Length: 170
Figure 1: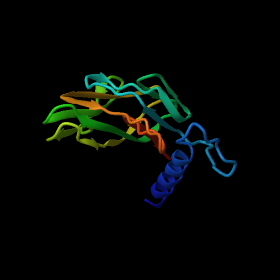
Figure 2: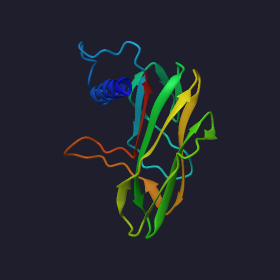
Figure 3: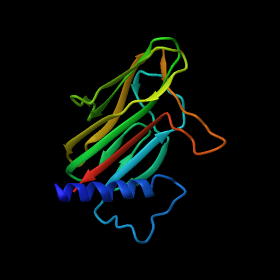
Figure 4: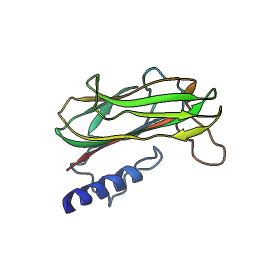
């Protein structure tokens, strides 16, 4: 358990340090062997199908397309998908879940329903699972009267419509 806590701490430290495209990898951060990705979107997205990611905030030993991440090493991975959901009508609902190789991951689904139009909340889907080299991770959504909402802020960093974080647990 101590090794897992240590690995999680190092992985989250590295992801936090590398989460901005404007930041370089500091010399004192050890990434040898580390494998992680953080993708996000500053685009408003309607539910239905695979979520799009146009920002590759950090990507180490993984590859990414506009809607997927592919791992390059066998191992156990922590996958966290955090969509920001706004109701477009009273009672709007959105479901989000993780897929691997286009197959739904059991127990990864989350649902948020919001009473009032304009209510905005973040919902988190997370799994820890063993992946093999070449496995492809995607996030899917479905819903009604809701959207994945991005906020372009003039007073601080942009607020993405979704953030996807993946880190290997060594």
